[in-house]
Image (cartoon, rainbow, N blue to C red; front, side):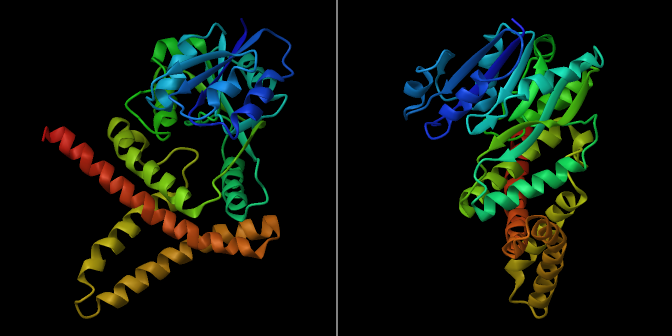
Length: 324
């Protein structure tokens, strides 16, 4: 078996059909299998998956890291490709990922980039454009790849142990795997031509909850990999700066009763907002949609959501370390 494609799925009835069809339709000249790991779905995910010639495996809800591990451990392919149940790989996705392994036997993993599956939504469009800008700035050899568009040698998964199942949500587990692959002496390559279309968030509330979750799990990630706390190839300087700025602002708010405190808070908010305008302006120019300037408000709120999550995660890490 040349390739195994692993799709973790949880209550994915709205999107998993297109994901499966895209994976089965790969224009790859080699043997392949598609494995759907149902992570405790309570909707029609199982019914939909069983319509197709895939290996369907059900498990009690344990999180995406556990589901991906269950998938690759059941796989037979020399290479394992991971995508998510709300992604639609392009027909040449597998082919473009695998061509990179011919460069060097020390290439342990290869990943690719995003397209957008719901371009009519303004928030989804802005999210996609930000990701595109980040990916355009990423080098060929990277330190992090997302598991929505990832391939790994099966032997490397065996050697590293795969995903860390301590990450219970879809956040941090792909970073942790990337860092382990690097520490085992392998290269990680980024091929921006290997593409999957993704349904980005359309609800601001759900998007900010996602960002809170990302912040929460970053605390554990940076405790385990402190050398990556300053950022990887996907992280920008603004992401790092926003956390202390947001934390400082929130720490002062309880003292608004003190004279002059309100002006300090307003100044910090204004400075933080000014940091967001450059990205929103670039997105507005790229899309020719002036309304994308509103994304500056979204990224401002995102910074606070991430900071709240990180603060809660850091507190949990400290309590766990202290044995309380």
